[in-house]
Length: 178
Image 1 (cartoon, rainbow, N blue to C red):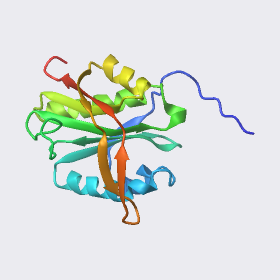
Image 2: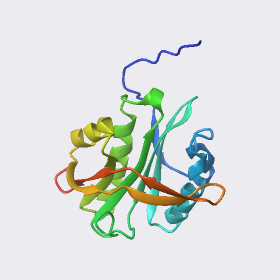
Image 3: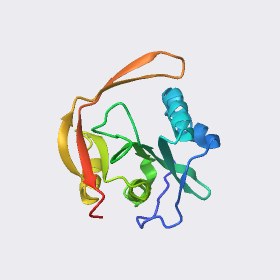
Image 4: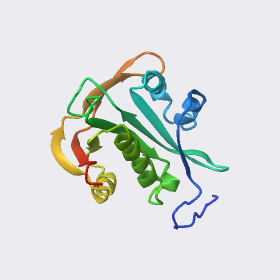
């Protein structure tokens, strides 16, 4: 068995940037997230329409190590209404890079984007059992505002509709006091 020991210090050479179409295959993390292929492609179409941004965290020699999706407008105005609320979702950091500042850098990029566009609130949903992520969001100034049923669906890479149930907490942060 080979073990890789990564330093516990923060990663300072991480590049946070908006995704390009050519980044879509890398969002699937070597096939681990292949079932989201259509979801990623649909989100990128929204990027091209100006309704979303996909942020990625990249490390030289390691490639894409994190991702975050940001919707400016959706069918749920309490999450994103195109005017005052933006919705952060799909925040992922590869396990070997967690707790090293990557998630925080992605979140700050999303919040900066929202503030630049004149939004007043950032919203997100976090799984009720994802205590580590919830603590990160609380440390960044988010607070729970409502329970979420966690029922949603997507079409997988071969066209099968998948139903998901992951109870969550809706959290928000005022960007006016940042």
